[in-house]
Image (cartoon, rainbow, N blue to C red; front, side, top):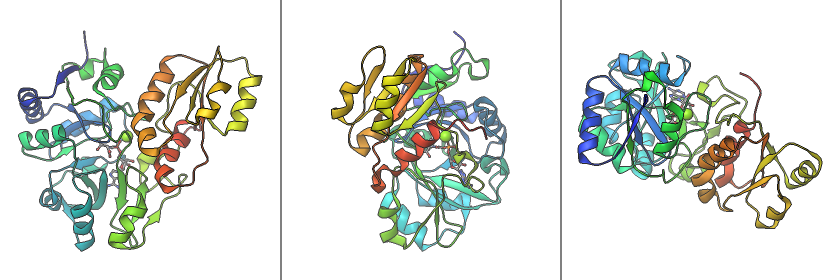
Length: 333
Ligand code: TXA
Ligand code: MG
């Protein structure tokens, strides 16, 4: 079968994957957020193949993954005390900092920008791979550009099986990603720092460390091109609705829907031929299951995916709201 191959992550497979990175090949590896499609940060041709395989715009920058602060400082300029405070508190973890790009880092590592996004992942397999390779690894989420991110090895195999450009590529299987949505991207080159992509960590946990942080509006796209409005999108048409609209639509349409509902009181609204997907009530549980649920909903080949929005304004729901809004956006960009 043409396409990538899944290898259970262990000492031997991680060594093999590191050897592939050394040869300039791509490797898929788990992080605590989502699976990444990795190549050596200092290896231009391997970075180019990442853009090609994902179908990603060449001006959409990548995140470099390092083990620690020292590794981050080697690749960036402008590291200051605030960065140290943030990294001491949250690295390894789902926090990405945008800083100046050091002259030793190829421009393609950050889509030609003078800045570089950098984070230290927590997943032991990601860390062991960086260690075995001995160099930083740049990796976007391993999905095709604009589609739903992968949170297990099988998702990645589903995306690339049959693709000759991914033939023989190792997918290191490190089980399901614990967090389930991407890291928070924080631009440290502006004052005050600005969240370019909401993620696993909220401003509320970062501000006590470094003071006020600004948010980028969902419709603002220029500072972080990957955060375009339509993103994280299943193939099936997708709508984000409140319970009243959900009730109305289910009573009035002939199309077959897959409905993602978290409130148990609303489960009974979904009756055949529609199908119900039960989502957790808490934000951590919801994030953990979100991409798998969107992928499974997609595979049912229904006419429509309806997602119940819970109207929660709590900051812990912000990144989930962001992803759902983008998944349900069919506006072309
Ligand atoms: O959790 C994560 O961040 C995962 C795992 C694999 O680490 N990675 C990930 O990468 O989500 P990606 O490429 O799918 O998303 C990175 C986001 C994009 O929106 C990109 O535009 C933004 O970060 N970004 C990267 N470098 C940037 C830079 N120099 N300036 C502004 N935005 C940047
Ligand atoms: Mg992505």
